[in-house]
Length: 238
Image (cartoon, rainbow, N blue to C red; front, side, top):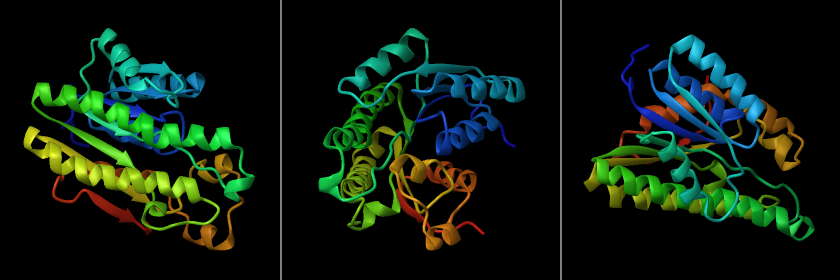
């Protein structure tokens, strides 16, 4: 594995499970130092210890609730205090809520929208601004295949992922003159904790189409620096 990211720093949100773990592992393999951010500290500490030992990279863990206003400035203050300049932002944190919209707990839906859209926007703003000052960087936003279509029983979730998709495409156009590449990863159904967290039991179709998460994350990182192709769908991994 090429150590092409030796000495670089990546911030990975939602780093305690699923895609977040895979992004962290793949980046560490390439020599990238990491800041892992999510709520579950024990899971991130275990991951961090493994990556430090296996790849001799520096890994910091920030146990933090990302689903609240002001998180962008707060996270920037944390990384500044660690002496870290983020070269790669992996905006991965997010979740879905399954069921009829009017039957869902409104506060849970609003919390989801805060994390999926507002927090992602804040983090993109503060770190893109810093990247501009330093001459460049990379940002990967995790959307969903649901962002391409209205999805009953995932109405608010799919709408939030449509925001991520369009936001990322526009942002790439705006930021490429500053040498900042923005990519949007839009996976289909993948073997993560998504269904468990959303409250949906996998259907037979979903089980038959289920993708492994690591190859999907690898596709996201592969395209992260390709500013000419910012939005791509990941349908299946053979």
